[in-house]
Amino acid sequence: MAFDERTLYEIARHYHELGKTQNEIADSLGISRSQVSRALKQAQDEGIVVIHVIPPEFDFTDLEAKLCSVFGLRDAAVILGSAGSSRLLTQNLGMAGAKYLDKTLKAGHVVGVSWGATLRELVAAFSETKPTPREIMVVPLLGGQGQASPDLQVNDIASRVSMTFSGSHLYLHAPSFVDTPEARATMLNDSNIKNVADKWATADVAVMGIGCFVPPSTLLEEGGFPPDELIELAKMGVVGDICMRFFDVHGEPVNTPLGERIIGASLEQLKSIECVVAVAGGVNKAQAILGALRTGVVDVLITDDVAARRVLEMAS
Image (cartoon, rainbow, N blue to C red; front, side):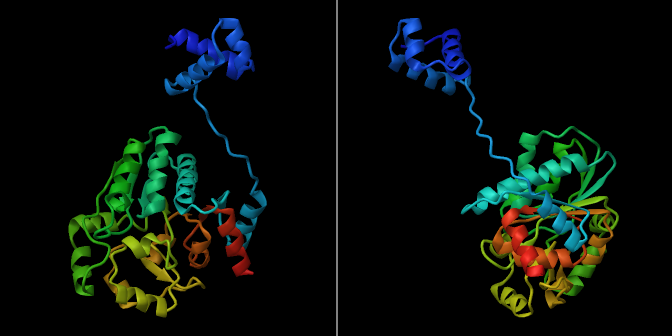
């Protein structure tokens, strides 16, 4: 027996809003309880009933304040960690980052973006946060990542951020690293690339992930580095990166031959940006987050409570 839309609505309203049992509804309509059960399922399938599961609210105000105090941050946002699912945590961090950008970006802002899984999820979250349009310009903070998935690529992320806000964007038609320092110098002298690079130190806001050397890691899996170079970086004490700029756990830049081949904003250029927002979480990234905070680049950290506590524990 199929029910019309009006009957489905009435059955659903009496059950979900008025609190009547399925037996009571069946008696009042002269139908069986199993028919009421099927009608409730049909109402859900047809979108008459939409179920939202609302997570409990957790107050991490003290944790956020301690992060700001210990590391001199302008702001911090801490979300509940996700047990056992790195993908779910990345999605939740992306949502938190999208909400933070929505309240931070102003018309006329130049916004720098990096690459990676967290930025991908941040962009995806805009479909739910639905920010109001505003005129911004979005620029990549480094070149592309070779064979990385298209939705992880910085040019794709820049394009999608700008479209979300009805703004504009520039493409950086260059790889994130080249074969020689001479090749890098040549590319940075190209007028199209220079047009983007000139905005790295003068952007108003930058949003980026933090790469780490502990799996799961987009940097290790999608960064395109030869294995021998990754091994060498680890031997030199590298714990993470911001825009392919490597640092140790103390926040000190680790100067490597690879660094001379990177096409992207330097740590000094990133420090010149008015507001740098880093979005990263997971206990596997704790060392990298600690090192990133100690570089002095990050103004705002968005992370989860498990990573935040671990970072503070290591810093004490």
